[in-house]
Image (tube, chains in turn orange, blue):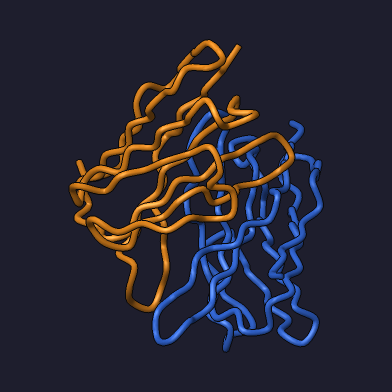
Amino acid sequence: DGGITQSPKYLFRKEGQNVTLSCEQNLNHDAMYWYRQDPGQGLRLIYYSQIVNDFQKGDIAEGYSVSREKKESFPLTVTSAQKNPTAFYLCASSTGQGVSYEQYFGPGTRLTVT
Amino acid sequence: GEDVEQSLFLSVREGDSSVINCTYTDSSSTYLYWYKQEPGAGLQLLTYIFSNMDMKQDQRLTVLLNKKDKHLSLRIADTQTGDSAIYFCAESDWYGGSQGNLIFGKGTKLSVKP
């Protein structure tokens, strides 16, 4: 089955620790995205990558880092510099081209930092 | 900047029609989307409409677009309890021949009462 996987579903960390969230897709999509979702805030774009070895900051990139060494993988690191990291994190991918812009979403990772 | 607005809550009775409304500010938007998010899950694309269309129907879903007023609506006929979810409106536009990123509204939480 093709799709996007995110692991783990729930993640707990102590304040001051970096944590990396995994995102893998087997849809052969070029573009991948990370969003943060807070209650009543909708989705906010953290980082996106349109091609391997290239990525751009989204609207709220401060305190986060990413890498795109492989087409299938786009891990997100939440660093200790992120002031309010507790949130639901969603990864998505798309073909990045064509007449529609359907983004396929993973199931999300809920990160709790105490 | 670009903005997408939605009301946060909607409550309907099972069997009634639901209408979820959205307004957007970017007049260059080319595609407008409706995504559905069930509790604790990622987003699923329900439907999209191209900006040169006024209406699109897909089974129980009807999308209406008023470009002049920059208003988009999603009508769900014969609403079922399984339709209870958060519904996100999103827009994208074109930059230099390729699609821009999606801008999401904050989501409308639809509650369906039996």
